[in-house]
Image 1 (cartoon, rainbow, N blue to C red):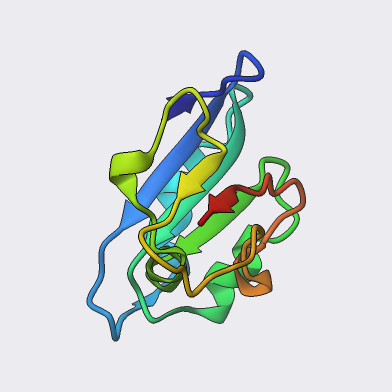
Image 2 (cartoon, helix red, strand yellow):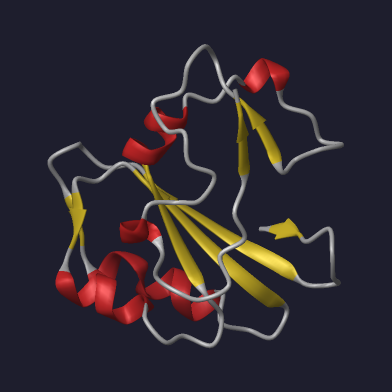
Length: 124
């Protein structure tokens, strides 16, 4: 959980570290969704290393009152973030190490499960 900078609410954060060939099932995210559906949360993120999500898990994330964003390991690899250059004073700017294979400043469409995605700038 993290306190939001721009309001008095919180962002719920879940990480799922699975073998690369694994699939995230609905049961794997149910308790996170239940615990983070309270009023104090305005956003939710799930970071995962799985190959895919089941159809039921993906469908569960659609139309929720508190949005859920999936950030998969492939996206993190593509943006090639240089964490040594990261600054808490400008968290919306993510410096890249060398040339990033991900030149976009918005997430892939496959990662957008709910409205309200706040894009992050990738600096190269």
